[in-house]
Length: 168
Image (cartoon, rainbow, N blue to C red):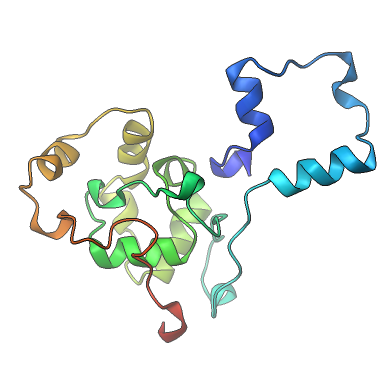
């Protein structure tokens, strides 16, 4: 999950400094602690129909947006309402998830969304990295100013904007 840009409660606690790594870090957890740890992990999105028929590797997706709030993926050039909905249906809700995509993930998503090469051409990963760090891009500034019609919030922003991929 960490490699896919998905923090866990444990990794967040370490980042916040409320949990430190010491000599006990490698000791096995008792059953109760292991169960509690596993129940705190984000739920992973299920496989989608035709997943294995695409080259590359599908990125890890989350069943729900962290904290119940998705990032506005339409702030990335090349992601409009329809692509945002399809990404949500794959479990991609956050900029940091896209920022962590490997070349194999880019190949798979490009094939699955039926526009190979577009993710690289439009530089989704670098845009997502900037946005995940709280920065802006020229495109995201235009979106914020309401100058990009395809990126305007139509009330479906967030978890409600999910495509039905059974008809893919």
